[in-house]
Amino acid sequence: MAARAYWQGQIRLALVSIPVEIYSASKSGAKIRFNQIHEPSGKRIKYEKTVPGVGPVDRDDIIKGYEISKGEYVLLEDEEIEAVKIESRKTLELVQFVEACEIDPLYFEKPYYVAPKDELAEEAFVVLREALRKSKKVALGQLSLRGSEKLVAIKPCGKGLLLETLRYADEVRKGQAFFDDIDEAKPKKELLDLATTLIEEKSAPFDASEFEDRYVDALKKLIDKKAKSKTKKAIVVDVDEPDGGDGGNVIDLMAALKKSVGEKKSSSGKSGSKRKKSA
Image (tube, rainbow, N blue to C red; front, side):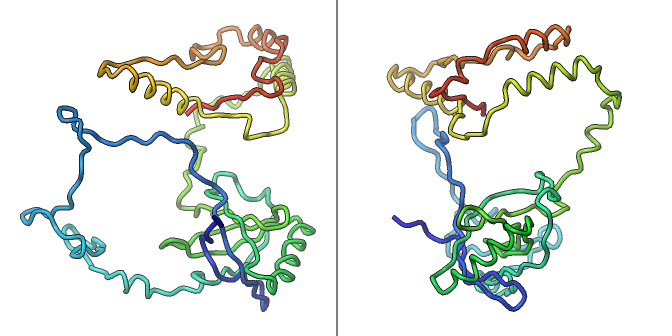
């Protein structure tokens, strides 16, 4: 089945408009989802929408409301909210171009693929893509998605474009407050050299397929064991921990680094093996 476009509209650069379609570039992984169960009966718990003093209410009687003071709401129909029109609902105007390195990774949220809507849009689309590639710039604009206007960044991605939603400044916490107590003294040269050597030894091209979710795997094992045992007792499933995973403090940093640098790569680094990520 062909993927459904997440958004359809046009990218506008000055007087040039390019009809495009945007598709989500991410998908849900193999997550374990739980339901809440009433233990005595073993049945799933259901939730009813209720009003204090009224009881259960019909779904058709529910509308959206914005609280302007304690217990006082401005009520809005879906049609009224839908009628709020801003240009970015159907047009993504590119208003600024910046170096990619200027955008702190803290601001990035979610990736989307951008493709031309049809053959007529392809020529202008390719020109924009190659102009971004040649200038080594990232385009910025604002786009209305699912009830909110998002700041977005666009850059070349193979034959297409990659759009990434960005957080606004007021959505990002400044990290310096958390780092105030860290000593500003520089590390000893020998320690720094050892740590740098260790990084170089463990450096390799990034391949996301080399990592798996260990937590999901462990939960699957637990569910499988419990389903077969038909017991209500807790079952513990061991999860392989990496060496040194006890969380203890390293007392002799120099000795630990020297030992680490001298070790051979673990079996997880061999061809065909997979590293697993923690939850």
